[in-house]
Image (cartoon, rainbow, N blue to C red; front, side, top):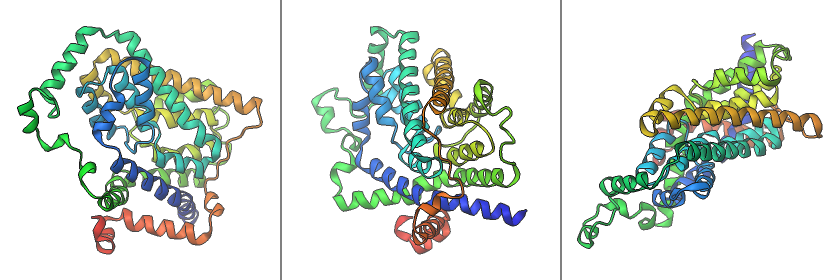
Length: 360
């Protein structure tokens, strides 16, 4: 049994390694080539336009449910509306380029497309719900300007102050050579970001391997379908801290043991977007009313998108192709094993610093 467990864990890891490396590389280039000033410009303003921009801008960014908080708070304090901030807070952790790559590897093309679309719908609808409920008027807009004036080092009070403004008003990306940008991208992807997600990714892979080993196929099928299963996924996912990448093998394992794809989708959307610590910070920054809308929007839209997925699977020829333990067979063995070994080297910090000191 132990040998079977280790084998299944390794097979899940093989499935994931190449696509995770590909996603990390894309995330590194996004990080290096998109400045914080660009982010602020994109999510500025009010209404559906700002909500849509915030959702689209946040979707590919490689930030988890805790990592997105300081970025979102910074955007809010720089002048972003509450609805745009909420939209950014939801779309960013629910999907990212690396999680989409892993979703394609483990769950097939349908989930790789449907998952980010569901995340965008969840972010936009909840953002607009926030705008309606909060109904912010010109009074808050003026207070935001005051906050921006006092807190942003890039605020132009007078020409003399512009000349003395700190260096944050010019982005590092604008002054460093192209070669340094590429090196910075590789450092972020292979060291900083991987260090942030590697432990949780390992937990997700181990859980998926354990599911393949110890839970008989279809064991959960008796309660793993329909609205009941989705509500259970809500209860499980809301307090949990798990990133979008790590949640993917867990969701694939759930489907293999009998949980419906719609219920697994609810877990994929809710788990990365919510956790207890994050909800406390959101309440402190945006208020309890916005936090309630945030939770309600995620819950309602996640379940709705899960039910829609179930309907599509039942009425069309579409299917979710879970390939847990088999996806690596789509790639040449050299590529699968090479990616797995490279990822191990990068994930184990002392080994990485010895063999690849330039990454740190």
